[in-house]
Length: 407
Ligand code: G3P
Ligand code: MG
Image 1 (tube, rainbow, N blue to C red):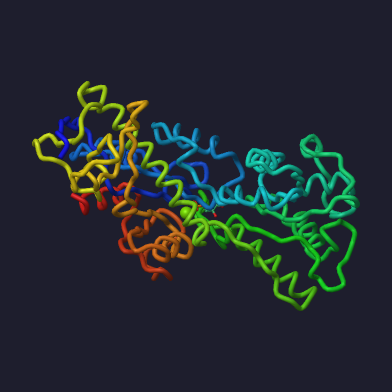
Image 2: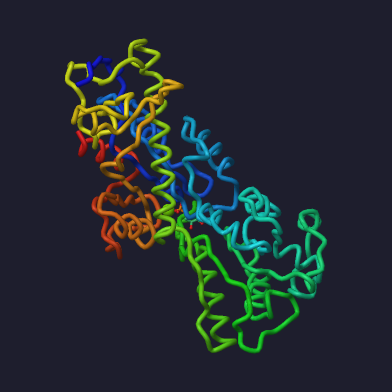
């Protein structure tokens, strides 16, 4: 049995549970920040009576800008540092389609922004409805391109381009133009403008970043979202062809987005723990030599399900049973400590829309705990279509509830 050296964990701890936040209706309402959000984030960053840091990420159905830009905007509003690794937008998981399609039409958002986002994901030939309007303004007869719009356009002959997929990234700024072009391509032969399929089975696939029918802005009543555009396009398609449109959906409450969110959350929790370990070896120079970590009370920490509770070994051939259960190993050459994390004990998901947020958090994994707040789409006094595990006034109350539940 190996001799065990000990090191003490520094006083700040990292939680085994984690948070996921919806953005619109929880953190923001249109251009306004929901006031309680700032204090909610402070609590998670360690300013709580338990001195514990709680990892968190954001899963929004919104989009139309790079993840980095959204992270910077949230950092400013929430008076903290949020990084792009903490942000999942409706279109973020579409990164996984980069190897599937070479030529795509990206719909939504302002000017060139969504094209830039798609290119940053690795898509090669990215076109927009504005490019098509520039090619032939008669495509949608009642809209003349503005000078700003023309400045964003690529010069392309769309009678020679095969659009393989339509990716609706963000809310359409011009339903008339976008619907006309989307429908034409769906009914086309091989995604070429100006052609018509006989069977209606030759057009490109269509993907929507989310299906929210309504969403919460700074207007009193909820506004129609991308889901409403989807309903409208499907109705036009049915009217024209007598057939049902096949739609590929991302965003909450879809399972693909849930899997993606879990991947991002695991990565982020690992980062928070690594940061914690780095501090540990700064505070205690013996820590990197230690085989076992003990807490401040001097107890050996062996509960692998707790992020703040771990020990590690620097040897693979250790015969001690307890040591063989380690969740982390020190890399011998670099002396760097790495941990393989167990899944979060509970993920608290705070959202305002029962149909997307609560359904999302309730559907895929029983360790997720849904919390519905009253600052967005959900209206007090109504019965939510999907029942949350807990309901509270705002995001600050949600964070307080979860922390007290855990301690
Ligand atoms: O367009 C965005 C909206 O539909 C919802 O955003 O943050 O509430 O998921 P969020
Ligand atoms: Mg919302």
